[in-house]
Each structure stands twice: as C-alpha cells, then as structure tokens.
Image (cartoon, rainbow, N blue to C red; front, side):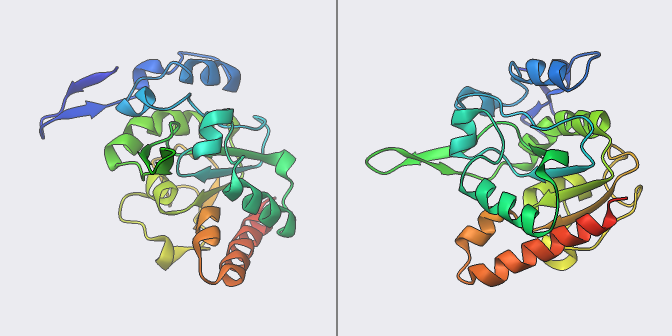
Length: 222
C-alpha cells in the first residue's frame, strides 16, 4: 500500500503510484484493479472503476460503489442505479453517451445483523483524497462537456470540502470555477445522489428534483 508520513500525524494515503504512465481508459481500469492506495481495498471484493466510452459527453460522479456494485464490478447497478437510469431517461439524456463513475473506487462498509449484511459507510476525506488521482485521470481521458456530482461526497471531491449540495444544487459552474482544473473544458453541477430518493419520505418530490437538475445538465450539452 502506498503510504507515507503525514506531518500532521498518522498516515497519508495516495493512489498516484498505481496510475499507469500512459494509456487510455482500459489501461487505467486494469491498473486500478490492483490499487492499494488506501486501506479500503482490503475488505472490498474488487475495484469498481468507471463505465462508459471515452467519447462520452456527460460524466456522472457518485460517492462510492454499493453492495451490488462491489459484487458485480460495475458502477450504478444496484437500486440507486435504477433510479438514476430512469431519471436520465426522463431528463432526455442518453445513457450511451454517459460515463458513470465514483469519487471512491472501493466499497466501504460495516457488517451487521444475523446475516452480516454489509451496510454502507461514507468515505473519509483522506480516502477521497487518496482516490482523487483516478477521478482526475478519468475526467482527463473522457474530456466531457458536462460533469454532474451526485451527492455530497462527489460534490466535495469536485468542488472542494466546503461545498454544500443543499445550497448550490442545480447551479451550473463554468470551467475554471470548480475543481483543480482536472475537468478541462467541462461545465459542472451538483445534485442529490439517487440513493437519497430511495431514503426520502417524499420520494416523488426528491425524484422530481433529481430530474430537474439533470435537465439543467442536458440543456448545457452542446
């Protein structure tokens, strides 16, 4: 595992040494399978890299793989993925022109209950920072026109730790107004994670808000 001393105390995690020196998405996906840049790899079934074509005009960034994603090795194949695909269709966005990924590539969870059900745990800032080089590489290789952060973790990864989805969701940011330049020419916005729709007491309203924000992204596509 790539670990070096952190002057603030403890260990600092970093995926950078695992990134290939060259190559496109297939080379990066292959390299990511062996990433041990933070401790999350130890308990996860596998790395869940992004899915989609390098020609995608839209990149959707979630938090981390869930239980089904961890088992299948693909992003957004669980219940939240079903909500997302339905919302994309309603917003008239083509899933075939969309690249799906997560800010963190390994499933973080705790086991509980008689069947030892795996319960999602949010990644820490250190874990997000460790995985950031993979996301930066994906954005560089895809070069999308629009990037959408799904939920608080993805929004913090793209817009910085002080960003609040509740305050600025649906607002479209121009290139240079967000991130550290890894997004290239892309404009970006943040919305709720589709899993928030499933957890909401007012699902219809939450879903309608997600669709509305995705329509902003659709309108921003050239």
